[in-house]
Length: 309
Ligand code: Q46
Ligand code: ZN
Ligand code: ZN
Image (cartoon, rainbow, N blue to C red):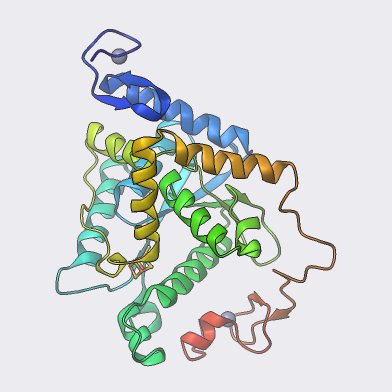
């Protein structure tokens, strides 16, 4: 098969876009597609400082590379979760993130959870949720808190995460199966800033996981191949597998599903009703000062036993 743009041998066939491209044209195409995605939803501009959340995986390193290549002002944040010292998931991914940044002379902030809060994620989970085998809810809370806090304290206009189309379609499927309207309403590529919370964006909302992986491989980015050991058996992976099976029979179903949701949202099908009380943060945490919708301490300070942050 030949590249649609230059007749060289194709390196990738994008069935969902009915297109085959050589290495150079694929890399260029993904850069352009990401730029168009950013512009379509006004995610950020060239004059704003962006903080990208980096895990050491293919999606986040590809996103960081693309934003840098496009000329955005973008630094990274890596959170060392202290996960599974035995197979060294956190050590390996941290090293890859640090190497990526130093090779390109980019700024990477590393937050070591254990050094900052005395316990790593498995230890926090063990102390607070005995019997729970998975630390994902604790981990999600800690990551969200640290990313938001770091972005605000260091004056970034926006926090970017590398959620890709496969992630978004799987989450949308789960939220739709449960009719979780509050979550569905917030599953947008841009969540605007509000007091105490930085703007959050997902520039890869229309990028297939396979495209992000191909970008990393073809541009020589070294990333961690292993998934977090705790992701095994997760509901999100199960929904991803189901969507992959449908996509095999019906190419572009994931893209159509998510873009259809965005269109419905533009038509205000999921708009908040005037009397909806969701997402209203009315209190300040007594320890860290962050807005919270519960009195006294926010969920993060409760988790970390109210230590001074
Ligand atoms: S890192 Fe953390 Fe994920 Fe690992 S413990 Fe669960 S939430 S699976 S994205
Ligand atoms: Zn070509
Ligand atoms: Zn707090």
